[in-house]
Amino acid sequence: METPLAISSFERQEQLRRFVERQQRVTVAQVCEQFSVSLATARRDLEALAERGMVQRVHGGAIALRRASPEPPVLEREIEQASEKKRIGRMAAGLVADGETVFLGSGTTVLEVARNLSDCRNLTVITNSLTVINVLADARGITVVGLGGILRRSELSLIGHITEQALAEIHADKVIMGIRALDPGRGLTNDYLPETMTDRAILRIGREVIIVADHTKCGLVSTAYVAPMTAIHTLVTDSGTSPAFIQSLTAQGIRVLAA
Image: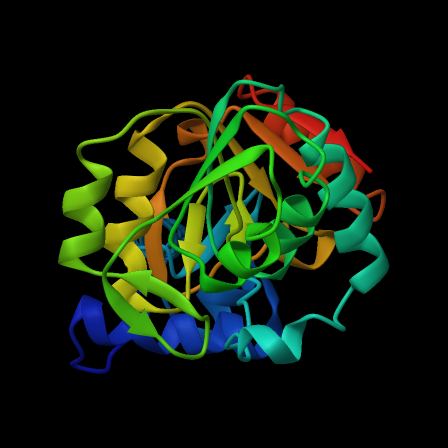
């Protein structure tokens, strides 16, 4: 029987969203009981929330999305998952060949990649990261190309229209970048809205796109949608990433390497 309260479907779905977040996992039967709606209405409401990215639909009900917490400044993050980032950095750097042109994004995991490239020869590194420039400044076998733009102080990176204009005129053999959160269904997401367009421009310039992310980023969703998972070719992560997550990416044709 439908609810006797005169509320719109949108209002009911908003109440349902909060209910799922409190319970973390709900069944269709629980939705029917909580909101006095029919099975058909309960299923429609859950589907509507799933399409808007508010919940994850599962057999017989729905579960709350795992949300990534706000990201602290780059210099504070160096100690987080430090050993995993070092392993990921070594493995990702091993994918780079002498003579290539590589774009390196910002972030602490990409910085570990940069630290493992110092012995490369005839390598061109393009970057919008001041920390990457600093690490590679003395690497004699590497030509470093820094992009201009607006300084994002917390990340020590350059973003915005000027950066995107420069990216439109270059191509790279490989793009190596980090991401705040990645989920098989919701794709790549970040928590800083002004950086979204810059991230998308970076993804477009690489013949091969490599994401470096430790296990704490996998299976999470953050605020700003960047791109679908299929925008990347390879994920380099660590051994703490769940086999189910890895399997869901390989099913989409994405290579996953666990350091």
